[in-house]
Amino acid sequence: MEIKEYVAMRKQQIRDEVASMKVRPHLAIVQVNEDEGSNSYIRGKLKDAEELGVLATHIKLDVNTSEAEVLKVVESLNQDSGVHGFIVQMPLPKHIDENKVKVAIDPRKDVDGFHPLSSLKACTPRGILDYLKFNKVELLGKNAVVIGRSNIVGKPMASLLTKESANVTVLHSKTSPQDMKFYLEHADIIVVAIGKKWLIDGYLFKPDAIIVDVGINRVDGVLYGDVKPGQKVRLQTPVPGGVGPLTRLALYENLMEIMKHGI
Ligand code: NAP
Image 1 (tube, helix red, strand yellow):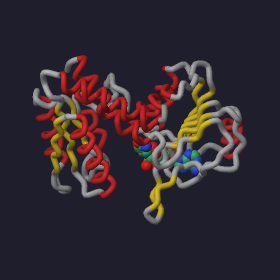
Image 2 (cartoon, helix red, strand yellow):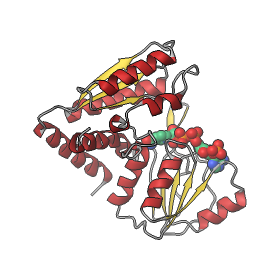
Image 3 (cartoon, helix red, strand yellow):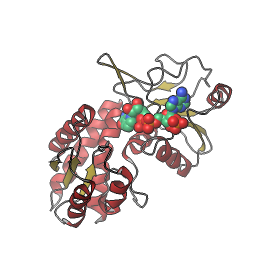
Image 4 (cartoon, rainbow, N blue to C red):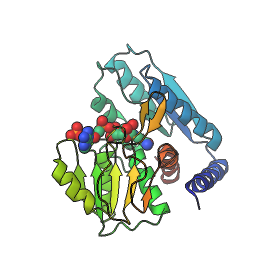
């Protein structure tokens, strides 16, 4: 089954589950920026909600809203029993402490999976893990390399792979070129989340290695991954269209978990 068919099948399953629920799932999206990237992500999330039959409320606050006001909105959503899950779209304006906002969200409603106490997986790593499982990629005892150590991709990805019993190495901007070469040569699974067009190229890989390219780099209106296409490996995810549809769906997979296991 192609990834597209798999996503379509999961969407249909979620649609059916939603239709059979007594209470319609309700997602709220709080936005406190004028960021073009965020506008486009939110448009996508609202479109997905409509497609899946999920009720979605977009709460757009002025960019000058104070931190205290944003925290008040978060608290009111925590208390609102009619809202099952919500996200605060990042980035936030500089006068607002992102970490304060992230930990203010009730972990039981944290569909993004950012809260340290959240039992849900962070969306992007969740989508990547779904992708690896869909492709029946063996993880137990395998050498996994994650390039990038951000809180939203690299770190939670490394943690999920560790839970799957892979041998995980996290590389970053301070990794020497020699070490980068060494770890990549020995890797079975490589997840790249750097944010620089085609930075990964010219390395020797195991022929049966799997490369998951998480990078989304827009250059002159065209999207590129972090890995140059055409690496000699068993599977390299394309950009766009690789893991994107699954990482996007992960938000609703998390919402379904909240609906099923109660809040
Ligand atoms: P980020 O917060 O900027 O983190 C980038 C990471 O890459 C950092 O850990 C950094 O290392 C590392 N890095 C930078 N230059 C490097 C180099 N030359 N060699 C090795 N590592 C290097 O970015 P992010 O939020 O994790 O996002 C990464 C990419 O994924 C972006 O293109 C973003 O658009 C994309 N993304 C995709 C999805 C999706 O759903 N598909 C979701 C989120 C993000 P240091 O820690 O040492 O600085």
